[in-house]
Image 1 (spheres, rainbow, N blue to C red):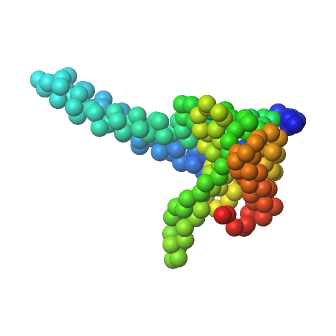
Image 2 (image 1 turned 120 degrees about the vertical axis):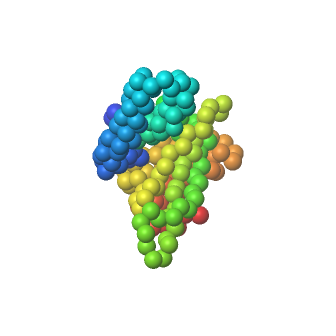
Image 3 (image 1 turned 60 degrees about the vertical axis):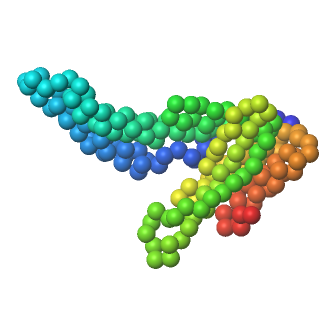
Length: 195
């Protein structure tokens, strides 16, 4: 059974608008300051009799900071996931991974992380991930819950439909059925207990 496709469904896993604005605002200090220091150090070395090796060693921390920030910023702007039919495509900073949920082995996993919001109870939030891996392929990770909300119900239901559209046997079939069932229950009631 194949799933009818009306164009790609963009999954709500990318960075929020606030995160993107924050990354743009942080560009000035995290890119501008290292570039400013590097240009001042270069000018100081040109006017003095200092060694080029000393200049290069002074530049290393600023260049590393600049590169780390640029990689993180690229990941924030590039990270997204979309599904067309039963194929999910996850774009990272430098990679794109595809997996056909109708054929892949799928399972859910979760872990707790402290709430970023400081509250008196030190509440721990569950982060739910779906893993999918086709035979001989690479594992694809999709975050289903971030911060305080799951993906929208229609996206969870679409993922469940894609998983159920394939034919599996044995343990993979049982795991796929449990995963699809939990995704459907989460789409109906986000407060459902995650096993």
